Amino acid sequence: MPENRLSGGEPAGPGIARRDFLRLGGAGLAAAATLGVAGCGGGSGPTETESGAIEVIYSTSPSAQAVIEDLINQFNADHEGEIEVSFRPAPTDTSNAFDLLLTQFQAGGGDIDVIGGDVIWAAQFAANGWLADLSDRFDEGTRGEYLEGPVEAVTYDGGVYGVPWFTDAGMLYYRSDLLDDSGFDGPPETWDRLIEMARTVQEDSGVEVGFIFQGANSESGVVNGLEYINSFGGSALDPDDPTSVTIDSPEAVAGLEMERRMVESGVTPQAVSTYTEEESQASFLNGNAAFCRNWPYMYALGADEASSNITQDQIGVAPLPAGEGGQSASGLGGANYYINGLSDEETQNAAWEFVSFMTQEAQQKRFALESSLLPTRSALYEDREILDSVPVISLAGEALENTVPRPVSPYYSDMSIDMADQFNDSLAGNISADRAASNLQEAIQTIVDQG
Image (cartoon, rainbow, N blue to C red; front, side, top):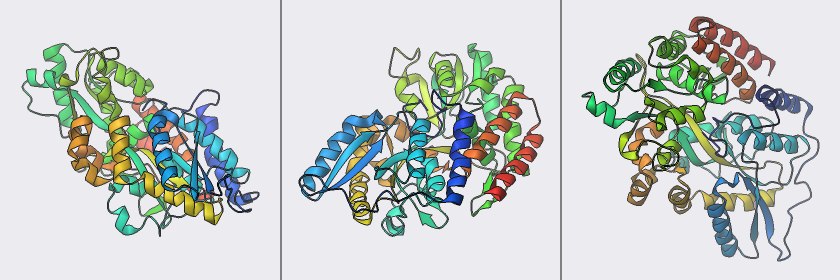
């Protein structure tokens, strides 16, 4: 996604190399877990405002700031004299926001009480005791009202450390007009079928590219590589045992082979190994590609004549194809609400009141309608006003139901570096898919064992 959105697919921001940043996020976290946290951010009790209300500081990306501030004002009015929430904009780039929080946590917790943050942060922060366990508050019954994937992303080691705010899922975009002209009555359901259809559309229409996606040596490339692996029934870690590395499996190898086959078949250019979301959307919206894998936000760009040479009427959206013996699997993006586990008890209680308010259906609906943030509450996918105003929800609801989180591990940042390297080498044809999987089995197992 674009850098001003919290999806987990963004490249690291300017001023810090991605590899250095991720090493800080992984090795730094492991070191902090070993050495302990110096001090406690909330040991002296709650901070009170002049009116005697408990102050709660909330920080997240300012990309939806207008809606956020309006809802904060509404909450404060309803809790006047009891709780007062202050908004502190975080860096718009998710990696820079993570870096800032990491520094504050390692220094003793900082003064941010509620965090609106990336879906991949939960395990990394929770493993160090930096997030409040919300299992009793965000109970099993309430969790059942949410999409399964976002709930899985906040679950770590038997605890629940966040509440899903909005979600993202990898989706298949296609030129519906070109498919119609070639006699196809719908999008492909398998990767093999996508290759066949892309070739036909290229031949019939003369469109330059059959299929484009994100294959760069980046977090975007990791998400895409895992989607291929997951769609064949493979995984990087055993979902039930995050210490068990499973990436050197026939299913995972088949997924990486299919990703490389997109290039070898000629429907995808070799340059895809350098593509992030920006290059992919430019190719598709300029009318140069028949199919494109991207996040939900891209659909709205089709309505902007300044950024698109095609119209929304020419764009179809569907779940990503399945691999042989597997099923459609979309990488999970989005953001969650986290509560600082180092804030004092009274402040955590007040913070929960705010999180509970912000995740109610009415508030999630406002974010969907006014900021095009896809809700995490299942019932809102049947809300007629949302379906009419944010059409990508109705076009891609199935994809949102098929989301798969990236490996939930406190050492994910280190794992991501190695996956980005090996996935990219496999896609570029520098090494075989089998070798990439074997290399990753050894590298990730070492990370888990050392952690």
